[in-house]
Amino acid sequence: MAVSESSRNALLPGFLYAAPVAAGSTTTTTSAAAGLGGRGLVAPSGAASARPAVWAQSPSEPARKIEMYSPAFYAACTAGGIASCGLTHMTVTPLDLVKCNMQINPAKYKSISSGFGVLLKEQGAKGFFRGWVPTLIGYSGQGACKFGFYEFFKKYYSDIAGPENAAKYKTLIYLAGSASAEVIADVTLCPMEAVKVRVQTQPGFARGLSDGLPKFVKAEGYAGLYKGIVPLWGRQIPYTMMKFASFETIVEMIYKYAIPAPKSECSKPLQLGVSFAGGYVAGVFCAIVSHPADNLVSFLNNAQGATVGDAVKKLGLWGLFTRGLPLRIVMIGTLTGAQWGIYDAFKVMVGLPTTGGVAPTPAAAGEQLKG
Image (cartoon, rainbow, N blue to C red; front, side):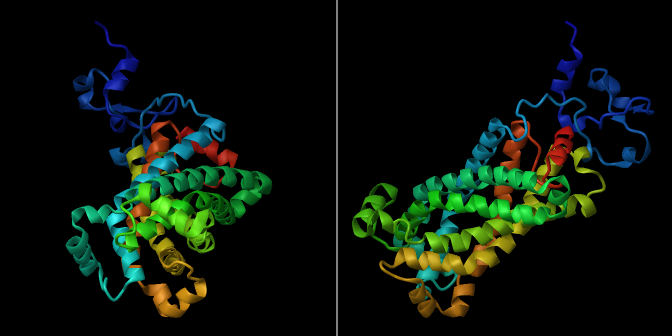
């Protein structure tokens, strides 16, 4: 039975294809042509032929079904944010558990290694994932709003600024878009964060969300679930502004200075590698900027009736900035890198371009779609 050209394409990995060749250019067919069913690897003439195969891309990708900035586009970004934040935060629950206890009880949890030892001795291996349910639910909701609304506000502020100013002041647009998104995202996160911290730092309080939430509400009322909203904004808004603005800038610099090919000519695996690398570096900056507020959130959610003044008095300014910081740098760096990797992988899976590398304008988005 004859095999159609499109069927042959589907049988070969996309990274084996060479870049599309413009009409009239000179091409060369490799000796592997016969071994690949008659379809050889086509090498573009000129400088492009010297590029490694990792930068090659499929000559005819399937037509994208999701229009940029359509409701389906924002829905896809929202779904990607759920997968990105919920799964990653749940995975690092043991690190978060030790970090929170180091912040609340440094005399008992003196270091990362001793913290894990204390938890293992007192609560067993199961104790390492205490609070994973509120973590999963809370950060899934936060991720949905964080990424979905970031894409919305980035486009919204770009349209207000106009193409020229959007390109000129792109960093301000990243900062404004991410801050606006995080204000909304934290409203969904705050109740679950309050229960999570209480479950993780007060042994015997509750086994998890199912019994922890009713106990929390009975003790402090529903308003108590939002007691930490202001410190949470203080932690998450600077964190998210740094996360998105530095990521977009780092990715743009990687494509500009580190990769000898335009983003549109890079393979999807390479683009996702850039997303992870940019996310990890951005995560280190995020951890440093947001750490004082993270200590405040842990302190307020652990101690009933406590105030910000109480936290500063007990922790001190030095402790506020440094207690638990090394562990948080490791955790947030890995977390942020993984989040960007998962988010962009999801976007690629549904036929959307990866994030970053060009200015946030409709014209730039059109250029991304060509890749």
